[in-house]
Image (cartoon, rainbow, N blue to C red; front, side, top):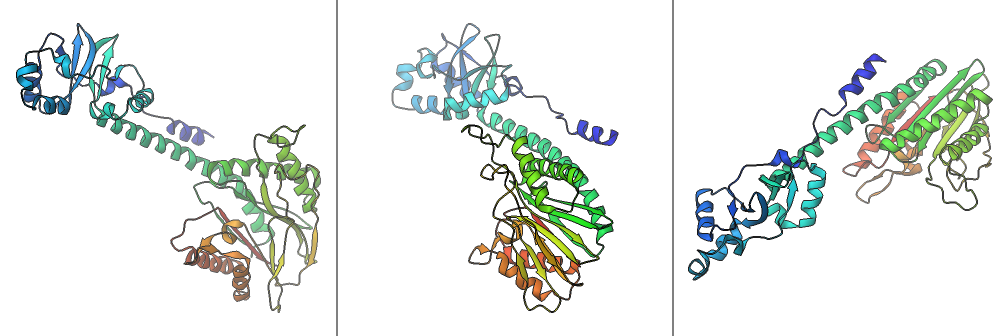
Length: 410
């Protein structure tokens, strides 16, 4: 726990929130009684000066843009007409003026509202209403980019630690699976650092239970859903045991709907519509008996000597979603599998992945063909072949979803 706390302390921001004063640069200024000749002289001596503030006393009242001023004064007879007149003739009377204490986010919003001139001319910075200096649009953009980069690093540190937590919650299930079925193989690949897929295994002397589930979303939202769904499934197993997968799906359905307030109460619109697709089964190795209940996920089965892969479809109802009845009942499907049968489960990250020059989904037919071609392979080799085929299929296409593959032999 102390290591975790130290990591969280390290993830805290190490930067002070910047303010407008951090962009303040000392620059020459003009007063209202100074002439355009003087402005021209100042711009000639300070060639890097983009704009020139005009003060009345110690308070800024305008800003002279270098390019606009020089363009105007270069016209015929302008120097003769305006040279000795007050510099207010060519100043912007409504420049962006901000206090040095203004935070960068507020300053950015103000600069955007002022339009392009705030970026090209810059802005005037004051302290207690008195002129302090100027800030440049390019400076502001650079600071905003640096601030965003620092925040992104902070977010990534947090997400990376969330991944540590998520994998820690899954580790115990991997250990259970290794004891229950040493020949089984599991692949878990979030699309992002954390993901919306999870798995859960439980065993006892009579057999073992497995869940492979795909929760709403991916990334951080999906990871939150996996914690809710896996906790609900664990509680259901503690209460009812693991020998009735359909019953467990019903328990998780009610738990998610209650926890997220997704129950239709007199026509109220729920705040969310989240849940999971899942494949659950209870398997008794001694008798080869497998009891399967699915919520929009299927079970692929290849029996020894069979000419094709059997597809055992789950029911077309997701778990926990608003359109799933609170008391919906899933049904168990019983299979008796001879020794050496291959059982395979995948989430939609495989089935729905777009690929090939035609940009079409991988689909269940290709999964069945792959499994048939790998009928003599062990579980790890089967999953490896599926991954190779998926990556070849995906090519340059974007990865669409999290991916979980589970394979074992009876």
